Image 1 (cartoon, rainbow, N blue to C red):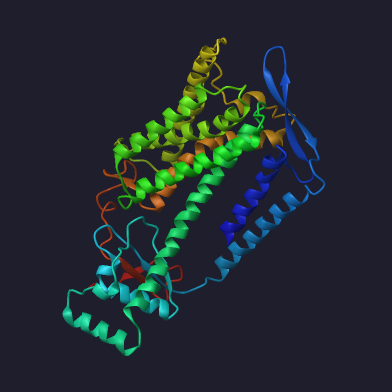
Image 2: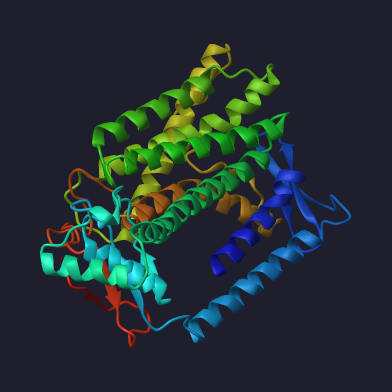
Length: 420
């Protein structure tokens, strides 16, 4: 509930940027205008009223934030349950191969105990509870006898357990959708308020969303293929391929072909950013330095900014200018982000702050998403992570089902169930 309200508020905040190309305020909207001077090109802001119903957008966003804050306080003050069962699939054995695990999960669901599937890309198996076994034949006979005596069937158990694991797919899909939209919003804001928006802005936004969705799905399938253990060769091939596609599309874009130029303006920066982000994360796995996740995010964001926003952008602009017979700028000039150099912060602090934040988020968001989501979902390369990783933390969980006691308020203290 709180995360949904926050996400809806962010969507409402970015809605005026898509509809009216302006940054929303409480009553008016700040629209960027290109200003030419004798020495440089700058951005100026004009406050306008794009639509008579514009005031509804910030009002609804504030309401969503308020509802989310109330939900956070309510969940904190009134915990929804006192205990839970935690199911942790692993790469060593399937849930359906162990009769104890399947039956305990089904019993917990039937009794109304909250059952949580851990955030992991490990498979739960494709078998059936009817073929599940126990290491002790007496336990297997007793469990099967209880199933028959209570009037349940193995098909009923399979339906209940599979429905539980389908919820995990929704969690994965939600993570992918939120990651895609957040990054696309920041890049859309930078594209719209850059002073050089394409003529067909709708094609740019659609191309950006489509490219980001395809990239997220490629990353998901690459990590899901081997249950969260990613092949370094696959990641390297994906990153190099995305960088090559983004570079070729940028170099061969033509402003006279307005639709094609709008598509490349939206899709190519997204492909370049994704390719460079994965390449930097891959390079970080080979480092032998232990570091805090926050420090890792900062270094990864700095590397992404240097390679994507500076080196790669300058190189592609130089190649594009050379191809069209235009003069090229110095490769070592303008090492300050455009939002800092062109936006008058003193005269218009609010819209400039939004534009600077969106510019910085293009490097920070991929770093945070890659590091945080990889940690959350247990994604790692075939060798260990370089930071915060040791032999003890790299071991797989041996028992796939755990439960929290009734006195455990947050379900954090887990006790292992009887293993087969």
